[in-house]
Image (cartoon, rainbow over all chains, first blue to last red; front, side, top):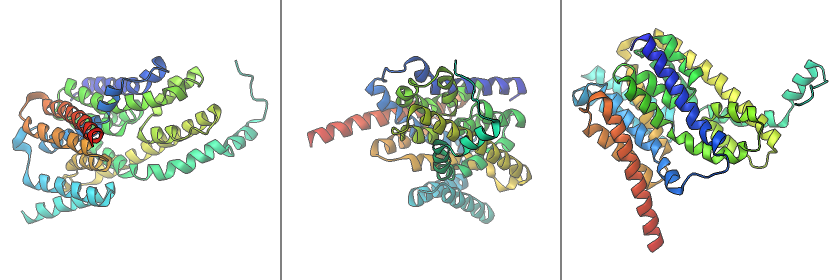
Length: 105
Length: 245
């Protein structure tokens, strides 16, 4: 990505981020969001972050970009997060798994 | 217009340091910041790997100040189109709308300048701190919120920069480019608290995987939208099942 496109992307993400945080505070102070919208917003986090994790593992190369070693590391990280409820432990287990498998194969 | 504070600058500094709201905020910030440390370091590493020029990727700290959106922006720069990158960051930030809605009544009793400045700091931790302090007066709450916001902003910038400096010295064979994906997966798992949330995560990941061949990284948006719909439907069904029981 060239510099002008990168600057434009960062500015756009910055404006969108601020708008998502400030919009209701500035313009809809006392009006609550509809219950259905609030309910749907609860699931934005798990849905988008899990999709992002899969997409990043593929590295923009489609199914061909997904390697067994990376999937195993990701699975180990997920298991460690579920068991330990600790992000540092999750990253440590996943990266150790990745390095071990890369060393073996 | 408020009258100027007649006390000398040294006394004003001392008064701020001993302000109970400021001390309370600092005491609450430190344990909440600890879990963000690995995230900040991974973001610093991701900046060194980014297809964006390093200084521009680093500027997301100041311009965006939202960890997950920053990590997506700098990580997707290599593979996604401009529109997909910005749309992904926008979807990640949708949860902030919920924070904004929850804190709007508290902000409505604050001065105008603070209603514009305060939302910039509204990260996950600030929401958790801000929403949990109904007992503070409006003035105390404002100082509490601003102290916490400035603390997180400063600590975040220092740690991301540390990660960036460390990342430049680490060989590419260590495959730290995989770390952002692991970070996102770990955050999903730690954030799951109920069955509809698990449904949203599994459907989001599954649909993304099934649509990886869709051009322009459309799989992220397809996965995200499908996951939100699935989570919503599961939530409604759980409620109905509970009502019938």
